[in-house]
Image 1 (cartoon, each protein chain N blue to C red):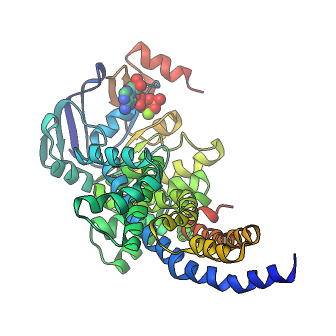
Image 2 (spheres, rainbow over the protein chains, first blue to last red):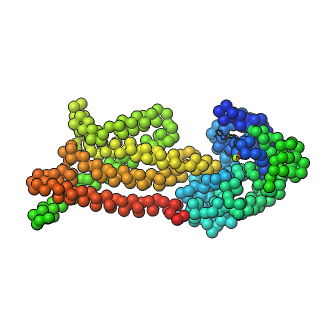
Image 3 (tube, each protein chain N blue to C red):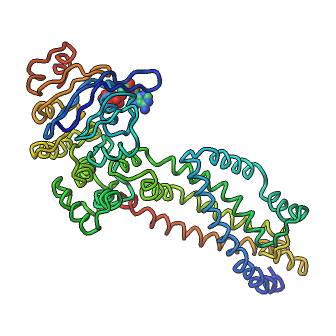
Amino acid sequence: MLLSVEHLHKSFGSSLILSDISFSVDSGDCVAILGQSGTGKTTLLRCLNFLERADSGIYRFRDTLLDLEHVTRRQADAVRMHTGFVFQEFNLFLNKTVLQNVTEGLIVARRVPKDEARKTAMEALSRVGMTDKADAFPLSLSGGQKQRAAIARALALSPDVLFFDEPTSALDPALTGEVLSVMRTLAEGGMTMLVVTHELGFARDVSNHVLYMEQGRILEDADSHAFFTHPVTEGAAKFIDAAP
Amino acid sequence: MNARVWGILVDSFPKILIPGLTLTIPLTAISFVLALMIALVVALIQFAKIKVLKDIARFYIWIIRGTPLLVQLYVVFFGLPGVGIMIDPIPCAILVFAINEGAYSAEIVRAALEAVPKGQFEAGYCVGLSYFQTLRRIVIPQALRTAFPPLSNSLIAMVKDTSLVANITVAEMLMSTQRIIARTYEPLALYLEVGLIYLIFCTVLTKLQRIGEKRLGTYIEETK
Ligand SMILES: Nc1ncnc2c1ncn2[C@@H]1O[C@H](COP(=O)(O)OP(=O)(O)OP(=O)(O)O)[C@@H](O)[C@H]1O
Ligand SMILES: [Mg+2]
């Protein structure tokens, strides 16, 4: 088991956004997190990377056990060292080239020598087919290129798990394919991934596990094939049927 | 225009220009650099919401923006000697201009910092950068690009505001012009002439601003 969460709760002000979330992820899993808009999928993913602080719960990551109510910054940083995050809005560093985006974490946070960082970064860029854009600035790229660069940035740090928050939702339909195919290759290569997505095709074909959420709760925690062929709850059945 | 006036204009040109080069420009340059340092610190204090210091920063901005520059000059130059603090006219001018401009520029820099999308910070944290590393390497460079045009504006305004130091006995361009007028009785021609010299200075700065914007904005220019 790579990570697990038990009884995670999270409120914004007085509204409970996530309630009693528990699940676990094994190394090599590709988990799709599905559900209607506003059910807390993004918030859950952000809690796992401490971009948002959960109110309570137990978070096991590799061999560390964290009480989410009292996580120190050092503990949060330690988890982040082993995770990568891919945002819906890419969030590439706008003042840096694609290559610099990828080397930034290596050089500044990991203190990898520049030459070595460059090499690692170019390898990561080649995995997403972006070596020819290494010296371009993010604002000159298409959405699909931006997202592939962002994936390379996360990959370069060799994370144990990659979190994706709707990686294709901000893209033109014509550009989602190139990003999804990069993700598929990663999953097939054994990368552990948690993917919030509205792409049910991807969830069905690529992920091996599904978490289906409604109103801040996990309603179904199932093998991907089982989820799509025999959803247990009525909500999930409707959700699957409603998809194009 | 007759030959006498031409003669006066030609004769006075270097006499006005020289204090411009030796006073107006250094005074502006030194004051502005100091102002930028004040502005960056005051803006960052507010942006990072540092307790107590943040309130001091707001108070400083409130006082400075709420009172005329000329009054500030008078308080420091004519007022402070009353409590035993004497400052020479030029250091006094630099001090007042830096503190005054610092307050205005702080607001420009703060707004520019706040305009950087929050996602830039989050992406920084996710690749392992600390708050200050993200600030220094990612957020501040982008904010300075945004702040550059309004800051250039302030610089150009300051060049002209230095004419106020004539009021505290500094013989800068305007005072030199007035002295020549007192001798020659040609106010129209001479005031136009000093205006022209200010215009030349500001034209050069405008050109420099364009170059600076290009340099700082390579990451934006490429897309066009
Ligand atoms: N910073 C915040 N402050 C207050 N409420 C928030 C905040 N972020 C999210 N919420 C609320 O939490 C709930 C869950 O939001 P979240 O973004 O996690 O949903 P989601 O499942 O990712 O939705 P979508 O599919 O639209 O992305 C929503 O009701 C949202 O309004
Ligand atoms: Mg979301």
